[in-house]
Amino acid sequence: MASAPQPSLPLFYNDLMPINSRDHKGWKSKTFADARFLEKAHAIPVTVDEFIDVQRHFPVVFTAGENSLPIALMGLNEGVNAFIKDDGQLDDVYLPAYARRYPFMLAKLQQNSDELSLCFDPTAEIVGEFDEGNALFKDDGTASDHTTGILEFCQRFEESGQRTRMFMKELNKLELLMDGEIAITQNDNPDKPFIYRGFRMVDEQKLRDLPAKKLQELHKSGLIMLIQAHLFSLNLMRVVFSRQVQQGKGPKPVEAAAN
Image 1 (cartoon, rainbow, N blue to C red):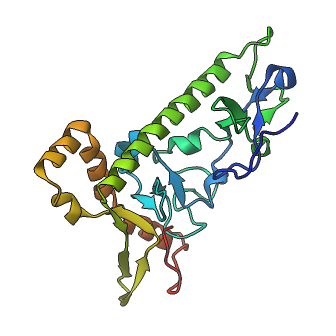
Image 2 (image 1 turned 45 degrees about the horizontal axis):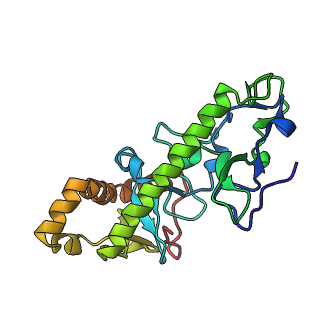
Image 3 (image 1 turned 90 degrees about the vertical axis):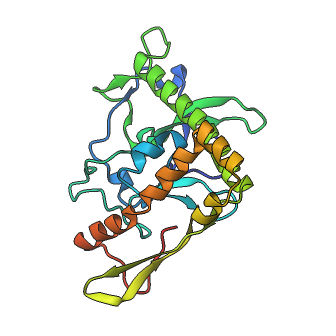
């Protein structure tokens, strides 16, 4: 059972194996007992289709660099997720689709082909020859309803990813992104704020300065709603910081980065 080619794997994935009825007939998929695979992830990729849900729980910012992508900040410091409880369970918050699809994803098996195949990460240890779980295939070798549902979810995620790339392309075309910075102080040390950098955000002044016609186009296309969701969510930076401090995961004075 050969793994798929993997020059670089995305967040969470340690390996990729394509699902097929020959090798995986009789295999089953279980659900995660907890969310410990998230506990060291402070930033989770999100799509534009999720902005409204995500901004109720986490700050939505953009990665630094040329190819910026939107991310939900579940912590403000590397390796800190402020929403995973001590027992490994996720707090009562929205879980981005990127994490919900794990350990499955669609991937190219041939670099010269655009065809995507359903794969899984075997190191997640929830897909295998188990006595209990959801079967991957029916007795006749066709995909089970469970596998079909996973495939459809992954396909919708890919489509959302395309819409997200178009959104980012528009932000870059209008030159609306700027390097972000936020200062957060604690009551017991107001003179020494923690400065967070390493992310990008929409420049509100540039947004206000856009021609009326362009603003009208953004309203009509729904993009302005997405931009506003991002901007509103930035107030949650301090909420996430407070959670970290309460959990004893607050940053030391020399460390402050949300990238």
